[in-house]
Image: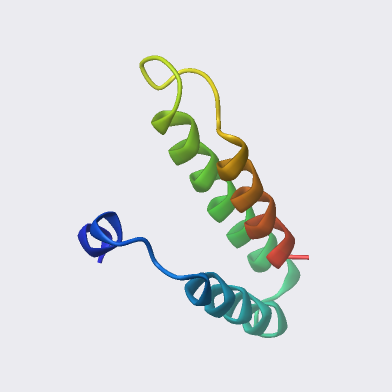
Length: 77
């Protein structure tokens, strides 16, 4: 799956589907589990963005990456 995404970027509909999935999880998980899921997803996204940018993986996260991470986080609200 990842190889496919590296070859051809997934469409915006994938993010929309993911947001809908999170919305359903919000109603089915207790508050603690949902909070832990959010922390895990957001932290992992931040780690990936940080490792992909800057010099030797240290440095900047692009504005585009920041926007996506904000969208990911907002999906949990």
